Length: 476
Ligand code: ADP
Ligand code: GLC
Image (cartoon, rainbow, N blue to C red):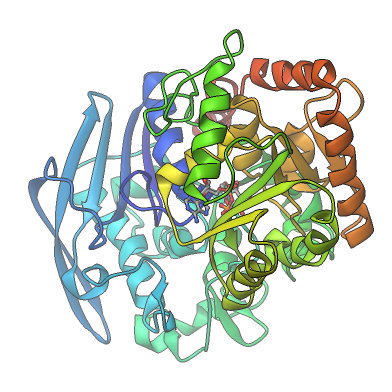
């Protein structure tokens, strides 16, 4: 099949979270299955790869606010896979992906309209006639809408669209004045079959209404978003479309996240030779200014510091947990209140806590390798990749039983990790205590680690599921 994959971030070129990881690795897996895949994404200022070459093609998109133009650049990692970067100085030439220190960019509706419509026009310019257009999150929702409106009679209109929900809470919601700003016709401004959402414009909703098929990134999250509690006010629509909605668990990039070959680590290790993990642990503690020779269990997080991630719960529990002999390291950036909270925790427990506020790829690998327990106390979690990285790195994840965390971490005495149910301090604290008890029994801990490391979270199985879905749409 010919697949056009559109995403607002693609690792390693741009990444704020798991979407970037998935957009960087799923297309590779689909190309390995023999499909012809083109990935379209913005060329942000951070994308400095000198392997990018001009395609000779340019976009020209007419909006009421002005005509936007820019070249299409290309990178071909393998014969079946091409990455197309949309360059537009005015939209993507600045520092930051969705925003900067002052908050979200005020013109994101234009920036992602450019991506959505630009992806369709890029396919036309390159005479690439996809069978499937695979869209991801709200930033690409308008592509599903405009494919059904602006492209009738063109080869592109034969394509089936699939929209993957990586996170239902981010919807791309704007005041209705942007209808005119973007030149969207007002007949689209309806609640039933359009973009309207409580008198605002909602890009994700447009995608959910117009895409041929919907997926989300774990089976459990697929169920949760059809309920009012997890549905972010779109559960009604998702229930109506439940026949077209499937949960397909994310895979991980098993080359990038492999403790046997990971070049970010001071030492490498595998399930049958774990000494390297001890070296990683020492290096991690040293980097955080903590004593390297401690026997105490080391807990850690790597996270976007957002409400979703339950950092507030962690901050509530940690002062008590740190009364016993444990260490805690945190790598993250995001909302100021959580950044401040982590800094304050370190200030109060300087011998036991290390923090790094910022985004650091290498450090995220070192944390996965160096800690004994990785904590994810998420309020909700569509899939979550970090717990899968943890399992692969022989680190026992402590997770709240929600979304994809349930689908990837096995609880119980002979499981792979520690799960807790209630989003409540006592429940998290009890989970930390269970981890300490596990740590005190080296044989049992070893067995946990071995089971985790033996699980296969590569894209092998899930890429096949996307393939089957795509094939069924094409056959329709
Ligand atoms: P989400 O996409 O909701 O943030 P995931 O668990 O799916 O959650 O993916 C998060 C990804 O972002 C992981 O690859 C993780 O290592 C990475 N990440 C998050 N915060 C940081 C950070 N501060 N520095 C480096 N990597 C980070
Ligand atoms: C989102 C979700 C996360 C998921 C990632 C990739 O950012 O928050 O749970 O793993 O997308 O699908």
